[in-house]
Length: 71
Image (cartoon, rainbow, N blue to C red; front, top):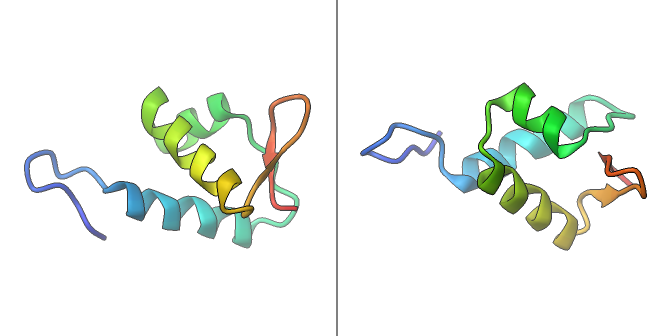
């Protein structure tokens, strides 16, 4: 896992792999951003960036109720 040397925190690319892996391993997984933040201990900005990128890549889709899922 790539980490920032100054903070030893996973880089955004690592988080993308982690989140993709979770959604691939758990068919039918639906998560809100708030649930994802609690699950992975993410801050708001990181969570927003991750989910926005995954939606842009069409890896995830968003329900009208704010849940993210694999289409």
